[in-house]
Image (tube, rainbow, N blue to C red; front, top):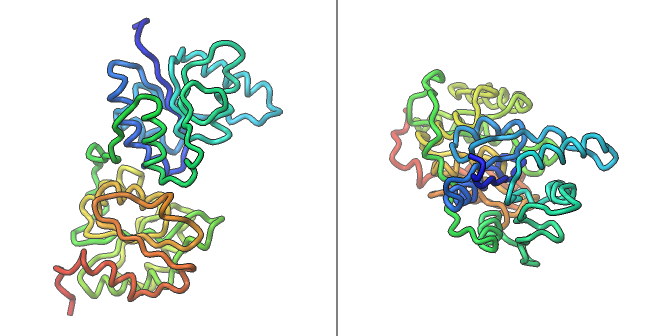
Length: 318
């Protein structure tokens, strides 16, 4: 309909940030009843966003122009203007997403919630960088008149995971992480020790990771026979579905652990001083953060102790 309110939401990535934006997405949807809402995001999150049913349209942020790529900037500007958006919620709040505000000028721009200088609804908190992602986005939206903001809800996420042949009880292990930040990873050898401890307690370790992490997962599977290696076999909705039936999950501070925790799987997340849980910790019903200056100083027995409250009713394998 010609008079339908048209809203644009910007959330480009990464996975953990995208998961933590699910609450804000839902709040925007509830606030703008009857509006046509478009999400602009990165290619890996398109199917996940569509499955949430929180958006009427999902666009891929494919142009990503550099400052000197005038043609691509003009193409992006044309595309954004073609949406005839009355308001934009910039939940990425980066220099890149703020640049999208600037290229919509000169002339009248849509209302804009974000951090771009001159926008109509700025997140005007000078200490926003010290806030956890959830509180920061909730406050940003409240300043734009959108309130309250719920926690992420993954009740809609369901896929047929019977193809994996898993039988409870099982635990999810997420030993990977950003390759350029190795300090955020607990060693594969320690994960293998933990996996063997789980097997001895009657708990099947299920290894999750992308193809780039195949070497780590193969090592763990080799050192802990009986583990199930699902490297490269799961999408985001599969992971959420598996998490809902898992006894517990253990992993580094990486995107899939945000997804697992948001699915309300009891989770133990391992942090070094390379990242700050006060700013980005996983949120869910039962999340235990273990933090050490370096993860090399964290031993398997400490992680198992953190898990013990969640697995105390298992029958030990003789």
